[in-house]
Length: 87
Image (cartoon, rainbow, N blue to C red; front, side, top):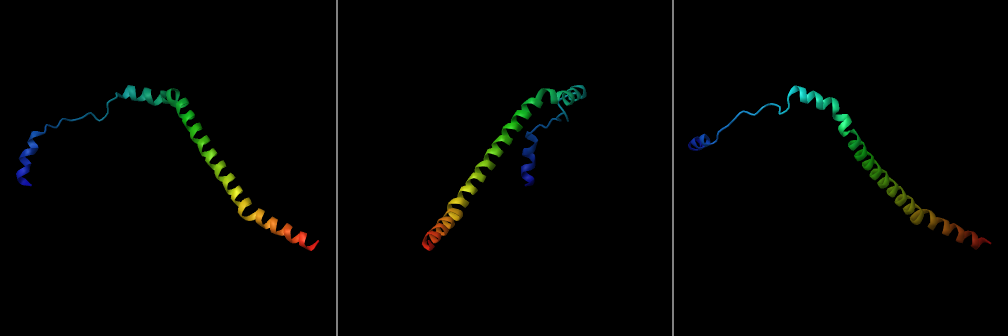
């Protein structure tokens, strides 16, 4: 490893600024971001929530159909068959 330390001298490192924007530009962005991007984010949030609601509705319908088809209707048919037998 010590032999490879000389290869590191091939790279030149330069300092980078801590922030690209000036303080004035940064404060302007902080104050105006709601005006500029608020509508866009609200639309995205609305679309996401509507997708989630659609998924929840589909799951509820699926659970209801499964309950009716696998539990309720077979028991009802059996009960109705038993009632007709007694008559």
